[in-house]
Length: 218
Image (cartoon, rainbow, N blue to C red):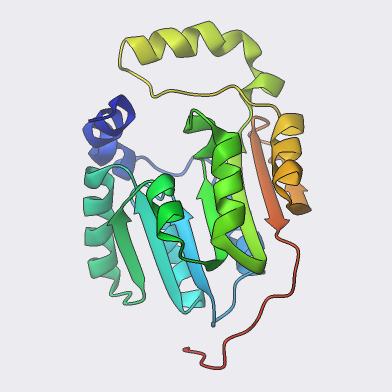
């Protein structure tokens, strides 16, 4: 089992109990995201954790697939889904690589607090571009520590070696935008919360015209 999977499995229950640090910023991200969602959409969220955000968005779309590499995270998310009685969301243990190989296509993809936890975020962004239909939207929320706390890199490496923190890639806003644009995305919205300067919330679209389905489920 990959070390990152072991870390998140070990910490899943504690992660689920952790309160949202900035409720105002979280509410704004939810609202901004839902401006790009509609009732006919097929949506993917990778790195969904324990499913809190997925359960916020699923009622707004036709179908919502939420995935994570941690089976413990997905187990908790499934429990939450059953308690909320939301029928159109599926929680699945899967990596972005696996989804990419299946060649399914989506109207929107969400990658929230995940790109900085990947060894190769550039490759992930290219995969997301391929997973999206023309006119599709990619919504990401990424910690960019190179812009704000570059001096913490040795601490992050030590914490990972001691198994008290996951792998973290020190990204900058500039290189994140360059990666998105290099993959073919057009950036539509940029936002840095005042209370979390290290966080970069981006909304980007794949060029083309989105084809709406004739069958819309409310």
